[in-house]
Image 1 (cartoon, rainbow, N blue to C red):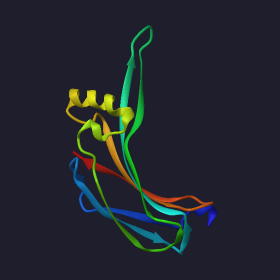
Image 2 (tube, helix red, strand yellow):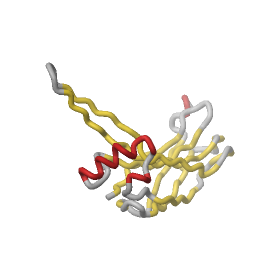
Image 3 (cartoon, one colour):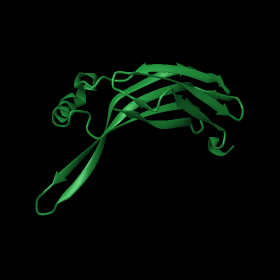
Image 4 (tube, rainbow, N blue to C red):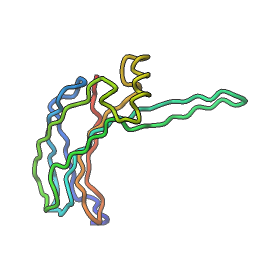
Length: 148
């Protein structure tokens, strides 16, 4: 195959479509490969993206948006080996609503925003399964989680 294209895919399945902060996410990763594939690892990644908008008012008005990663968690589900059509269950706890559960660099920013808005400002939460294939394109699947 050219650069690893069309070698198969990954299904990322969770028990529910909506979660609450502090709840446990349970699900499974289902590999759907066309043939056995040597890979370095199968990894699960969870993170939030906070979109911050800044407005500059002066002789010209401009605005910009910046995305920052919060609460990134990576879990290796399996190591270097030959992978084929297998299922891998996973389970992890979502962060609590408290600012102290976030990365140190964003504690103050998110803490102030939580005080003003009552929650995580403009945060989208994602879950990704990735098969790390050397010398080829990784096979991955990303989904957005609805966390309220």
